[in-house]
Image (cartoon, rainbow, N blue to C red):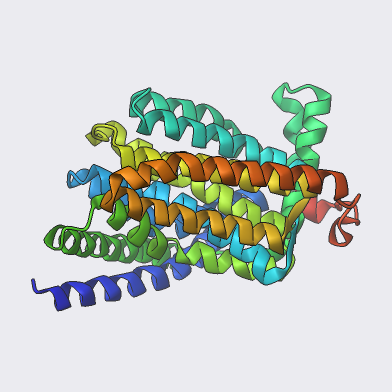
Length: 387
């Protein structure tokens, strides 16, 4: 197939995949609401649906023997998510206000999964072991989100833990309830969702295949095709949704979208297929991408916790870190010596600057954001436990 046709196929498939993913999200939310899922679990379901393009592209690449493209799509998407969802969201909204309990709850899961992803990609542990380690954290997390709030104390947790979890989930759900308000699903919604899945999967396969062929034909490295091009394109639905939430002052919903999307990407889009078909030998470029994924996760969560949210300046810092990441990827594959020098020095400089900024923010953070001064409501409609 000629280059113009491949480019056209890529663009049309991208538009079809991204457009249909919105239909998939809305219909799955309705089906989930009919099944009685909590608002927090509906948020996870929406993140999974929005992740369909990158997960499909990654699985297709891994199954086709393009391990670097597959890994690059998932990990590069996670780096892009942090920049577009949290960084750009903070820049556009001016501020993303967050409850610290929500940051801790989401952060523990995010760092656990990011750390495991690093261990797998650098070859320290096999993909199967990494998948088990991720599920050890992810399954209980999803279970806690799906449990009725008044039943948390029945899980055998200490009372203090159960109260803390209940408060964190309530703080997250009070925003998700506004952001996610589906009507009760019906049979046509399930049918449309199933059809949307097929469309998204098919379009994402075409998109990955077209990008892979163009990259091979013109000598573009796999990590650039997967980690930058496909990663950014397939992550656009999540980015648009998060900017929309940030502009409406829904900080917890924005953070939840970013962290849940990244967690599901690693578990479903990388470790599960890699356990079946393999991930290939570790590479310098893949290591660079996954280390930046972990580092940017730490940076975003650290800034958020230090100031109970993200200001526009911190959003610019996160976006700047992503641009530095993209520059390093391009430099490392086209001028390896310079790329490796920059890859080792630039993160240190950014990390030192970020640490100094977080220390300043910690000492100057307001006692409470104006948008968070109201206590989380615990009525029957929001707790869902008394119903």
